[in-house]
Length: 142
Image (cartoon, rainbow, N blue to C red; front, top):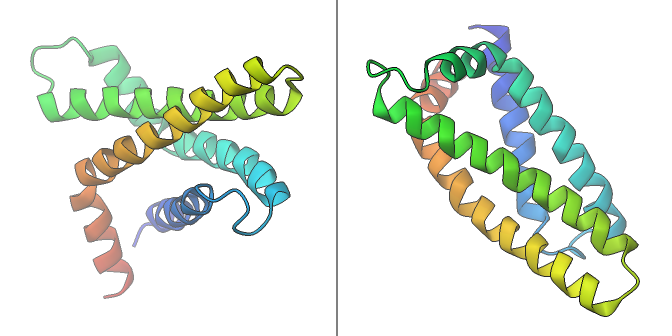
């Protein structure tokens, strides 16, 4: 079994667990919500670095007629998901720094909206990679 794939699987599980805890900011503590949100951002970057070769290759071929539609959809979903994670982090930071209630309300709306959209995108993302995920899990536990 490829150690890189095992590491990617563990990383994905950690990200999933963290992501689930975010939807109740006081589940553990508000401080945990903030710190783990920033850690989540770093984990996303690590996830992307581990998949850098795929990202670069698909970026170069995105408009190639021979590239499978499934791959294009996966790339676009991943890009939108990355943008949503950035929006969640940025809106969270601006929400904490805002002093005016109207500004807080706008950032909060963006934060929550991007969070719920991310749930859908993560579901689609996992669904698109389900064969890979299940094959790695089968090999790990074989």
